[in-house]
Image (cartoon, rainbow over all chains, first blue to last red; front, side):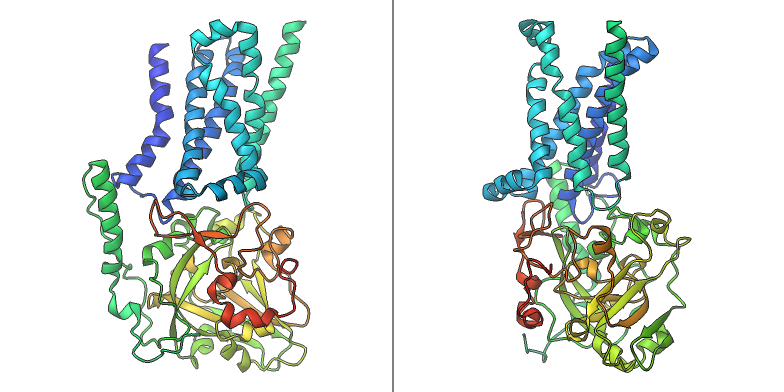
Length: 195
Length: 317
């Protein structure tokens, strides 16, 4: 299990590491003519992918009847949050250059940005309470209830991505279908468990 | 309108590409120094395959702003015929062969027909026109185009009095253009201009950048450039020019009529439904440059605002 976690840690770090290497010129191609956009898009995309991967892990455990996917859940979720937070920070610091009036206007008036920020904010309490200490303090039931926020966050995240694509909707559509399948799997699993 | 036509030296004459690219190397070096890492050895140049276009006239319409590098202009492209990613066109356009080329001219004119690229270009002296380019996605560049006024060409076909608009069509070659194998938009790409817009002296057909023939990813061998409109109006790899009486359909307004109009004039006051058009990111400005304000008609208001007198630009966007 330890080796598995270590391997996952390295894998999840790769997209970020690759950005650093491309930015430093050690790896070709570099970051291209619009590095801010490339960094921002890459971080957001991997944040969303890791969030969806996190949601895949429990159904995978049911399917395989093995516990190891569940053991990766927290790390996957925290990596997803880290990429999403960095995606937001790159947007605010580099893309908008901390122009607060423009940032607030975008958050208030651009629905795709509003829902993106909302999705990120929903993940904040989940990241904070991801430790064993917080699990104990909240108690299993309340902790589980709180962590159901991951579903609306994922829905808003996919929507946020869907909404800013110009014409080629194939990738966001794939995530939307995957997310719908995952939600259905959960519902099915809950019903089975109750029966 | 700037009038200083004398004593103008073309950037392609005074600044060899190696020097333009030095700026880039310099920036990379800074980044690398910041990261405490070694400098890569790769240097850039205009690939030898790009044929030089010979004598170019300077133009009073050129901006004084510093042009983007050849690399920036030729590696960061929206050309969905080769894929929707910005680096797809440079990676996936190698199989596209823009020679031989001919253009069909038809519709409301007396001298239409099929015309070879050579015959089309022959009477027109080439100029260097350094224009700002503003993409609808809120980024911008400065491009040293090589071309000639579209109006000079259109007159040769003797459009009649029913010719109110000009429609353009991009080549359809899915076997050479991988992006066309997916129905992202309804191929072929089509665009159009009102006759007065087409005849305006700022409107050019471009055959090159930086004094060399257009790279495939930039719309070889012949493309439109309308600097006061969003980039998607400047249709690439043109195979058909039609004079028409009614406003012609245009690809992006067919695909999303709420988001893209026929006119598509650069306008900081009319936002795209999903993002602001008030500011733009200048490509090459650096990590911490932020965004700069977008100008009405992309800074060409003095020359073109009169074309739209009396129109409600909020509605006819």
